[in-house]
Image (tube, rainbow, N blue to C red):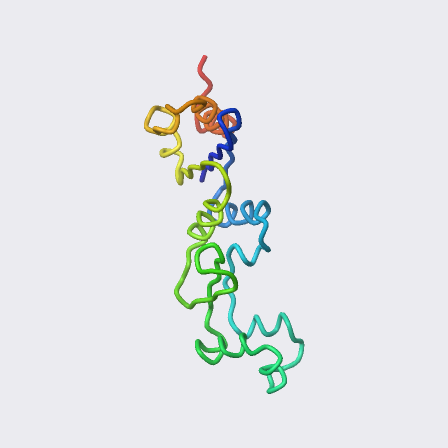
Amino acid sequence: MIYVLEIHGPQDAQAWFAFDGHDLLRKVQAQDPLQPWEVFDEISPRELMDLVRDRPLDEAARQAFPAIAALGDQHGWDTTLFRADHLLGAGMYQPDQIKVEQACLAALDQRTGIRRVYWTDQQAIAAIEGQEPLFEALGGWRARHALREQLLSLEVLAEDV
């Protein structure tokens, strides 16, 4: 599991989870002001062209969509390209792989407030057990409580009796 703790002020802390990187992407995309493909996408130039044109690639298509044609010419029409606007800049594609988690973290970092991402149950448990300096700040107990409640609701932690 992946846990995200968001703090928007001393009185406002919220924790939520994702099952894996793709679930995290789905949840970040749902909350991000960008279009889903701007947060993260992997697509070939041919697939991009197919999205904007329903006819075969020809000179008219190349002239109508020169940026897509340039991507196809430069990288190959069937090469998977990666897009993550928060990492690369708006509308930029590259052949070097970007992990879903990297793109999500970059999108989360653009939000206001403070956030922490715990990539495993163990990291989240260690945080609430005192290894998170953020919880010592003013109002930090609310953040610890939000994360603890998330862990309890998922039965990662047992309720203290």
